[in-house]
Length: 624
Image (cartoon, rainbow, N blue to C red):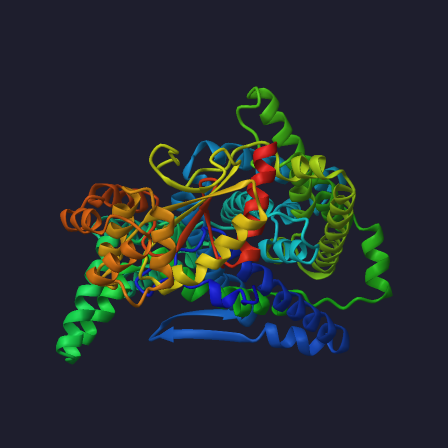
């Protein structure tokens, strides 16, 4: 079947394109890592060609004044404390989405990654202090804490197909906790002078944002002005204002788009088609905007900016160090460099793996990581890639030669952690298939997205009834994308005897006039034992689904046409169709086609390759 992935990833235009709480975030972070590396390399090149001009640029003073009042910071400080607030805001948005829609909606699943993150940070800091305790560099312990999400995910992407998405999800959960704790450290341990009046003003501004959210205020300008006031107040208080970004991101709720919201948007659009006035055009835009949850809308808008512009600009402003014989000689003997390097390369994996193993043991294995133990070790080793927050803390903790030594340790640790991760993955790849799957995926069942389990006594099933892999499709017989997906499903069932396929109805009557009638026709045919033959005919003739067409199909299949017409007229299958629609709503489905594989939503393309890959992964998990 020679169809591209892109042509089989669409859904009917009425659908919300619900992304996994991780997939889009991971993709942007991974590709943004390349831009980040390029910016860091450019900074290193510039600093080694002309260090004086590099430092002169970033020490340029830039002030914003209003009358006698104003804020004056160096260009580097505007990047570090200003633009990076947006980076942490996006991190907060993703954390909130993970809490509301992702793996962490089951709060028990937060315990282990949270303790693993604390273990990794604690071990890294302990190793750093083992080199520097009692010395003048001891206050730099915060440098050896935080993982760079973009670089860590980027390095994993370069390491090939043996890195499952569930590992990336576990890593992201760990680093969200990691970054949150790092921000707490920045706000406390690296605040030299705390001015309480300004801090109270910042708290007041944030409280006003909480009140606005509770009142249902959605106007972005309100939160922007309150956030700007809180940022200025935090800056004046002595607390690094980047912490505000995370706190604001956590305010923005994430929830599935409801069919009611989509219906409302559709109603506004129909009124506009009947009378295309400027007022109704604004109404349509407002209806569509309100249909998309603020969290998803803001992530789509800002995440590319932080990944491709803000974080690379931060790297360009901070990664430049002049690497010469003198620096290398000092770094080799520097307790700062060695503490950071070994803290990341040894401390992170030992702390994360050890904490996860200890929690699993003490809980009697009730709390286990959502991946195998080899994957936990990989998460620990790649967590040793510290860059963004590490450079931020280094700039707060050090200056002069010590800052250069700290940057050298951060860069060396990133390379060393990536090399160790590659080695662990290579060793894991050499294991026999069954042991490799267990080592990477583990035995913890993923959360189930499908609200109603498949019932062989009720559901329409194609394939072996007892097959270990179940593919459920919520479909609409008039949806063109469902028609395009049907050959891929057929090929999947032909090639894999361990897969069964279930069709459930989601007729989108607002956009497909004959969808509900066609669904009823399939149920009327089912009453005569011909659901699947009718199913195939309906998807083959999506442009001819009027009542007379449906009766003609019944005759073509050799059914009792009079009984079929009567059953269709009285709505024999209406209750069953309504139950399917209710199940779709509870499962967060609002468009077609939407697939579930062993209860987990299938995201992205639904061509043969994508469905086969999802089915194989589900089958491998079922064998554990």
